[in-house]
Image 1 (spheres, rainbow, N blue to C red):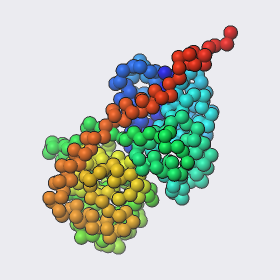
Image 2 (image 1 turned 90 degrees about the vertical axis):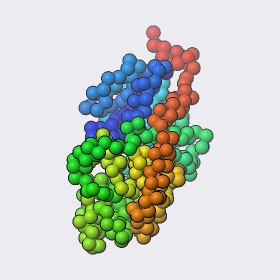
Image 3 (image 1 turned 120 degrees about the horizontal axis):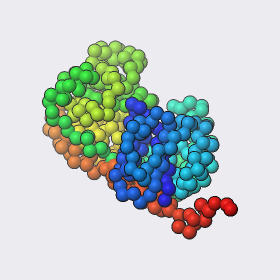
Image 4 (image 1 turned 135 degrees about the vertical axis):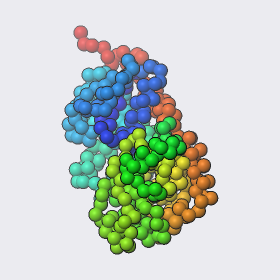
Length: 377
């Protein structure tokens, strides 16, 4: 089968979220046996151009960026040129006119459930293109049972058409014990000796403002490190409580340094109110960090019993969870031990194997494929 995979969301310096999912899928496919031909769709200057690919995988460059109107005519033309049997859109972006089978990965329905956080253009695009493509796809992959239920409820899609393939944890996410290297990373990012870490962007549903309010309300005096852009409104909250000196804004943490940062974290906190999966708390667990997460959306499903849960809408409850995670040393040790074991259950190879099984469901018969590709005389 000839399978095209959209990888345009992989850009220099960004390997989180959907980009991480696509990258790990491609790496596993590159190491699998060559039973199909894969065409990886990229934009110019993609980081994927610097990698060496096996013969059964080819890069195909298009000019239209991820989530652009141009892709609505550029992608169908490319799919026709390469005679694709299947197009995997590993996000919510796909062309309305697709000349082959279509599989989409829908990680969450943020854009539909929380439309107030998106621009008018985004809302228009989602309503016009995304809903139609999701309904027209042959199969839908998603990353949690929570997201599957959201898709069924909001889009009236049959659950039989939707398959859950959990994200994985890369092998390099494990406890780092090299003290010299840990100190190197600490100095690189100017991290305090002990700290609480929140790794997140600052979109409203990530709930960072509520976290800062809770931290300032708590009796915790260990610094809070926010791995997100500097936000004056967050600083003002800390100033009002007299804790401005305890709030640190970290510069962007490179992927290669994340395991070390997680490993030296005294407590990792993830108060998001809406997540299709929530990879950072799982990666933190894999590195032995005690974790506090919101009891919301997919997060209980992902972290299991290996974290402290809190009500993300109650800053006093978040404060309680922070105090518990910092002060109860016995609980911290148990969570660290159980978290490492729990995270091992999530594998990118397992996700890839399950995805390939869905590809096989779309496989056209040899006869039908031959008829489709007959050139006119």
